[in-house]
Image 1 (tube, helix red, strand yellow):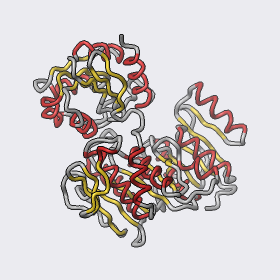
Image 2 (cartoon, rainbow, N blue to C red):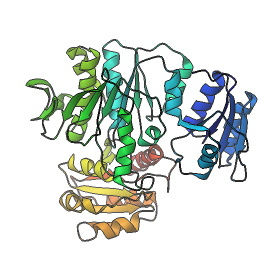
Image 3 (cartoon, helix red, strand yellow):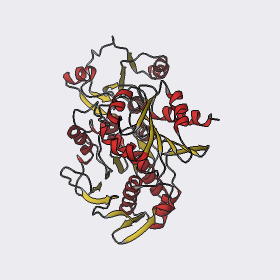
Image 4 (cartoon, rainbow, N blue to C red):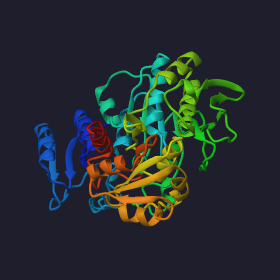
Length: 438
């Protein structure tokens, strides 16, 4: 892609927007940066872009009057937003940061999507490929934008890319050589009008694949027509190439590894491990190297992360759980009774399907944030619910409610933006509050 001298606007200045702007400037584009927010942090970060010749427009009262050759949209901004429509109405092509990076990418791509488990699977695949002697890096929605990796120009054998539905909305030519599709459960229904619309966004990962590509898919899910060769996995007893049975990760009749030898537990993590093993086999990683990598891997922070045990009560940080499926899987991973801390930003999800599992596994629920009243209405009668005034109060209340042998579990089921910067901020504060308990 030749972008030299082209006029490009970057809409949204989060991490991916800044990464796209950096790549565009490095490739010689004439760049305008646009964000509705005006904050001291943005003023500081955009000063460096101004010094490199970029135009910066911040604030609601700033309007785009120029005609651009291309617009690059940050994933957090929906295509329906007014400033996106204004650009599109002038005939400007709108793509996302992922699509932009892929146009300059010289290496094969393993792309990973799904509602839950994307980050863990992306990290697992990267670890296995590295153990097999291939140079790769985990990037994309996991935190390191793909544009940053491409801009560095460091030689790779393959990129391992986590991909969200938001990123897939704006692809045009993006084509993963291996597309991994883990699962699909209700999420982001504040952005999508229905599950069908959410599914359609996720399905776009297969959009440009051809017969010489591979789709690694959960056989329990529904899929559109796929041109790529299919390799299947299933951790819940369904028929597939890779299965989880009697605690073992298997391919056909071959037992590859007992999950108990790894640091991950449960069928939801088996999905991640099976998908990673499938990629290892496709890429030609030896079985020994793949198994060693699986055994060494430890879960990323904020994903059922054990913090401490105090007075015979365990405290676990699952801040990454931002939908009902993730909460259910977390609850089912414990044999102990749970005091659950849940709540956060309203994403339009109905939480009543959790009533049964809460009745079976939870002793109490402590509610936080914007979703308190909706969760209280959804769960009353199935479990004792206790609204908390703030996060510190929620942790203190959970300690009082827990009995010896219980688990206090932060598994919010919601995004964090009503009270925190992101799920990492929420999980880090939980860890600090728990560590401070006496």
